[in-house]
Length: 323
Image (cartoon, rainbow, N blue to C red; front, side, top):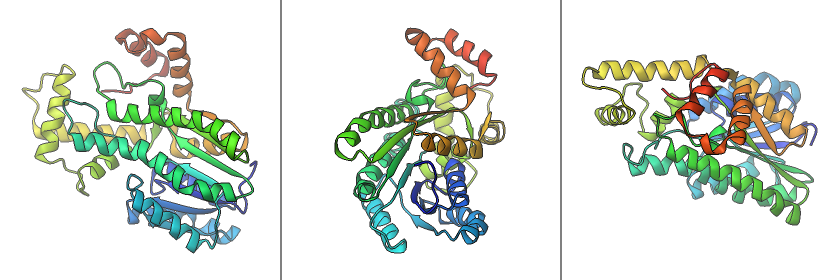
């Protein structure tokens, strides 16, 4: 699939970040797009950004509310796509939706851990199984699953627990690699790719918190503050002189820096993904930091979780994953 003109793509998590940029760039190439997200407002903004290209290239962009971790909602999303695009097939499935949270089995709740795992892994599985018959019916198809550098390195550094997200992203990577053979045997006209981004400038830090705690407020609750204190203390920080206001300011700064100071923008990441699909690559690393970390882990897997390894990565990449 060396171009997307006239095709139909499904993009999960299309309300912001890489998902939004995938939708924008697909529409600009003449591709029809169906997007899902849990935020109607965010999807409305994405559609508005695509409006000019949608008219110019006569493409349709539709928005659908769906939590990809809920099978009934994914099935409804599929049915809406078929009805609104008047089709029984799709060409592209971008399993992009993801959230953070559930870093520690000790400091985070079971519900937060499960939510992260079920969105980041369960969403990929449910959407692939649900939309697979529509991909098989097309003349050509491609499944693009977003993993992460945390799909081959389960860490944010030696002082930050990162269990749920890393476990989910490892699952996405393994699933996609196994899926290549499954597709080759049963639907050889459908391909798949696993995307492993490094640090991409998105709002995932702030958006994940709002999804995890079902809030639109930018201010952390007492329960969130207590949980953050526990995590930071476990990482070796003295919390005795840290006020709630200090913690709020810390999280606000983290979210801003993650978005604004990333080495790769969401638009650059989306272009790299689409270029990789056109080139038929099954393994798509995004960002120089992802390539550097991949090389380092492969060269010294037994030392990948030691402090010295992380310090070497920081020296090479020029920025820190954890805090």
